[in-house]
Length: 98
Image (tube, rainbow, N blue to C red; front, side, top):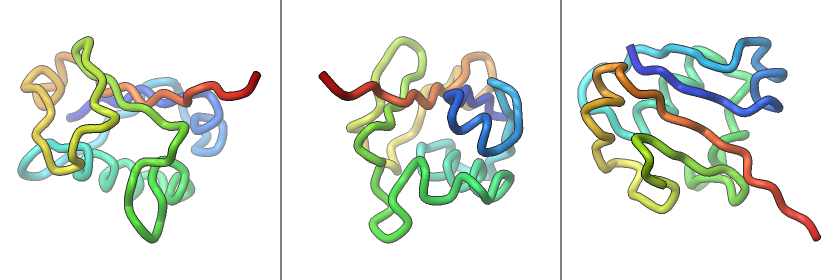
């Protein structure tokens, strides 16, 4: 199981807690984790990535094992610690404004 930490506004939308678990078959990548997250919580479709382009929304960031994966290819493998469930993938809502 892959552990995913999601920000408060998405937790509220999905009516879930801070950390959720999803099952990913095959390679563990941002794409497969987001696919599994959206399959389990369909109300999150379009909130983490654009529905048409499938690209990360501008104010959403991804972190794992102390690294920023926000600009990494969606198909790049995530660290083994995430794949094994030892470390979570963090979905973070960035702040904007002045």
